[in-house]
Image (cartoon, rainbow, N blue to C red; front, side, top):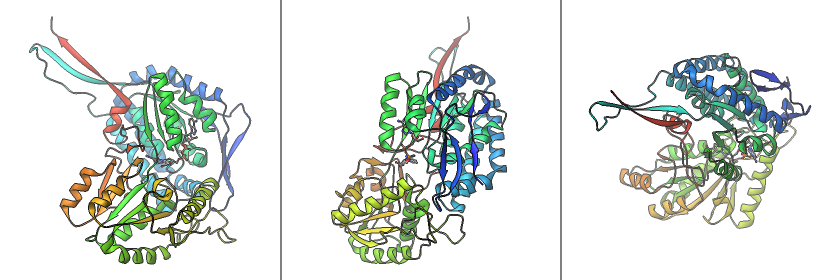
Length: 482
Ligand code: NAD
């Protein structure tokens, strides 16, 4: 059933004055699965003004009470888990078990930050004067803009909004249009929690109109963004101009190194999962597999054998292991990169074709592997964001790490080896925010800091305790008795 969702501004669900809607398309069958408002910049301004007006009251409510609201949001998400997970599959294409997992993660993140409401918000520090009391206290930043991508429309908004709110900020949330119905259902979990009006605002629309208005607004005290490097750079410029705090999580070109002493079965399984789950559309997806010469042929043969077993189909079908690309644009990008790789001289080892047919009418592409890829090729340098692996052969550990670092990105990286000394060298030398040993490159734990190095991130970290650093500023207090 196709539903229409409104904006949530200053405590009310309201239609856009534009009178226009944005349709969201199910990538498995190209059917419309819901609609949202194609908002105007005036509605973005109304949402920002509502957040501005609400910020002093919300700050005064106190951290403990703010945490209690997040427990209610978590309960609402739990009550709607199946419906929201199904929307996620219908809208973005990931399989239903993956969508359920993401929604459960959203619930866990909400509970984690709800519990922050009852944790310390400062430290007592010994003063040089024995008669003085010195301590720190966290203060909220004010109004935070939240701009998110389509690939994790439940988890990413929640891992930004939950800490922003519990630490006392008010927010304006604009999700990506490709997964906006799911985001609207998440927004409803916030609005139904009884949270005071103006604290949580939700506005849908295009990045160039609504996103641009939020990003450049002088009402903003901070902006948190996840998405492409291109958009991230524009946001950094706007934030610098307005002198506000900003957080950017952007693209990746994540390597997996498989050394001669690696466990073959485990490394193949991890590469399959890291590269092809969510149809390769994770920022931490494995897209370069750097294999040492001694294990190369055996690894390659096993990887191809296992890839051939992958069942591609509608994510709602329990037989499906890999769903479609999330949108027509993404599908076209993947097919273009496959052509680019062939033209650059990489050898197509497996897949490489569209799977669109009468049975599979959506944006389906085969899981694809390229062999004999050189690190300078575009397929080894640029983010494809689809089910495509570039296999690169190396002779030594040092060469493997050099190739792994030879990109502008630095989000996640993994190595398969039994040698602890080599693993330690990799941990030390790898230019990435997430470094994993004998585990796939994809995988994020909400209780630990998350973020990238180099072109993948602005350098700040999200999630876990790191979120507190971004969403607050520290006051140092010194009290002396008279
Ligand atoms: P995108 O940059 O196209 O869009 C992200 C968001 O920015 C959307 O809400 C969009 O509407 C908005 N936007 C676009 N133009 C804007 C503008 N001018 N001003 C303000 N907002 C604007 O990215 P996408 O295609 O939605 O997401 C895919 C990208 O996200 C990939 O590059 C992926 O690697 C990255 N990603 C990174 C992480 C991470 O944590 N590092 C996680 C998930 C996705």
